[in-house]
Length: 179
Image 1: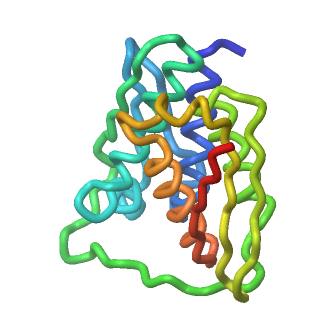
Image 2 (image 1 turned 180 degrees about the horizontal axis):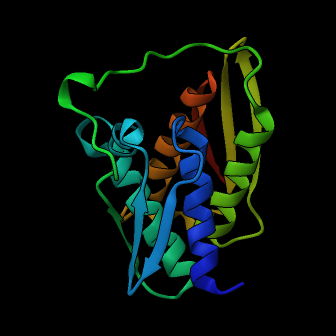
């Protein structure tokens, strides 16, 4: 698999974890930019309040691009093929699901750790705190702490994992332990 395809696969997995109406997101790498197109009803999930989810996705692609392609990559969110009229845009409320997909969240965590953190010495676990709430514990090597501060990879990782959790029906919090 080409490095560009690996980068596309990472973003594809991330998007599928929280975009509920886009069974196959359109992801294409081209000349330092990774372009993404989702269903119009999922556009807001990719942007988030005040653009925070888009920032997190862009930050993750920046780190993944640096690790996989050895160059910085920017994210471009393309307009949906069928736009949603403004009067049809709605906020989807959180619905707790005691049967949330633990395996899918675990696979997302693994994919992000492998592509963005570029280390095999990262351990993690999920501790369920309530029926539809859990804490993700990350154990990262202390010597990597400064490398992920600008842009803040830990914050971006947390936003995406929480977004995927909300789409699955679980409230996730992230706790990082530097060792």
